[in-house]
Length: 258
Image (cartoon, rainbow, N blue to C red; front, side, top):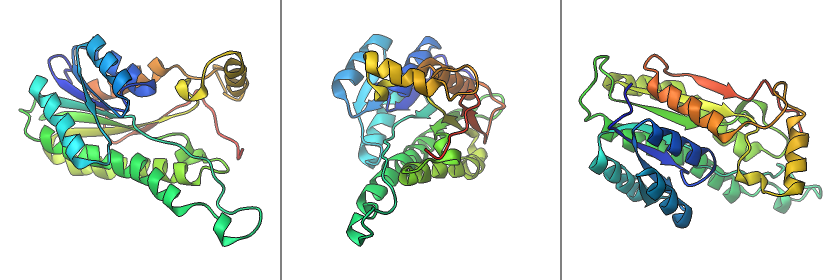
């Protein structure tokens, strides 16, 4: 699938996996809409790569539609990469055995709402816009890459909400690809392992912590680079025969209970 002279949406695009992906897409000639809540970083990145920033909560339909409109104003929308998400670690029950100390239900709902519902919200609306594209020789009109996590399969203690949400994204992949095949839109999902993103912080203590984490990886014994995610995401968009797949990007790690 040709990326040059098309537009792309990247949610969570102002930092981390989203930022790296936005840069790679721009290098391939796509006009990128950086969708994020962080206006300062988002504006700066969009200016640097020749794209557009849109302040966007992925659960807000009006803001997602505004992002799509910004993309189609630059070029036909052919690519979507969903990187927006949150994480939270809380055990299901408390140590005191009281109902009040059980996992906060509103927190569980929030993680599901952003990570799973938000991903689907962007997919359903972007696919609607893509369905109007003039198809290529394969009859294709676009492609999507969603972001899950190895926690979808190897959820650790305290990751009930996060793993549920990411498992939902994996479960979404095949039926969504089947739904959208009628208009020629492919859907794939990446399950990243331990990727070095700003979530780990910076400085000597952070570097030491990341080095310890890397020892648990099969090979190579380090955290993944953000660009390793980005290059895979772009390949999944560009390779016209990749569809309905959920791919672990984890250097062979299998997460232990804790």
